Amino acid sequence: MISPGDADRFIAARYGRRASPLTPLGAGAWSRAYAFTLDGRELVAKFGAHREDLAKDQIMGASASPALPTPRVLEVGEAPEGYFAVSERVRGGYLDELDEAGMRAVLPDLLRVLDAMAAIDLSGRAGYGGWGADGAGSHATWRDALLAFAGDRLVGWEAALDSSPTGSGPLRTGVARLQELVAGLPDVRQVVHGDLLYRNVLVEGPRVRGVLDWGNSMYGDALYDAAWLLFWWPWHPWRGIDIRAELDRHWRARGAVPPDLEHRLRCYQLRIGLEHITWYAWRREWDNLERASRQTLALARG
Image 1 (spheres, rainbow, N blue to C red):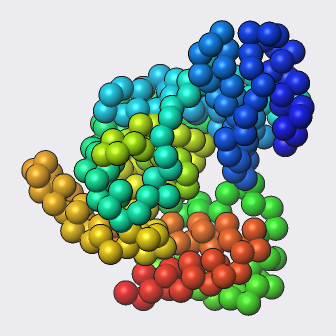
Image 2 (cartoon, rainbow, N blue to C red; image 1 turned 120 degrees about the vertical axis):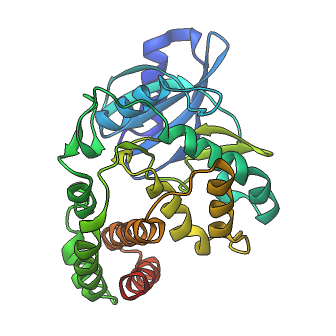
Image 3 (tube, rainbow, N blue to C red; image 1 turned 90 degrees about the horizontal axis):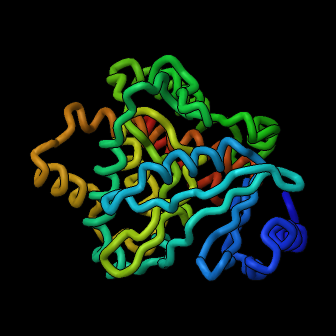
């Protein structure tokens, strides 16, 4: 990935004195983000290894609304050692860093944001699962997409898992159970973010200010994002909030309790667990791997 110095020189060469020096904002496995101003306007320069991720940010930015605040991407192009995107800057704190009181305040708005995401019009788009810059999903059915939980970017995760203290047993058990559970799922096509609670949601007080990083977005059942909250909730300091009760209250208030709710949520949590077994194995994060494996086994045997 491009170095901070090279990123600064790239922006200076592209925009000249109109642009301020870059200030690091954060970095993930596939990208780094920097704040800067251009003609006095606050923007973000994001550099990544995969153009597709940045293009998805651009497509979702075009769907921004007061109900779904996501930064508009102004430009995507090639950069040294990868690609870059320039987007509007959204200010706020990370959802992940809230205490319990902060989460209680913003949770109603977060659930409304998930509703707005699920309501995006996908007419004219085909397929399920991860989608690309052309807007097409990668799989013919939602069930096929769920079974493809190991991304092709995680080269070597199988060997790492086999040699880990946890081993591959929990993964095999979880896969067998997932194969049974997916048979009863509906082929619902909605927008799924698929990466909440990874410093991808900015908040201020009781409001969500920005939903970032759509690289893991999928077409499928929007309940997947609710399952994401359920799976990761015990890992955070606001686990004292009964998130399932809050979700149930939200659905009842809307008069739209999803059918076959338990089956769908369990299936999606199981899939999230399997995905993160491969992720933590690839990253050699053995403590997190053991915890994710234990939680996935509990879902498989529930």
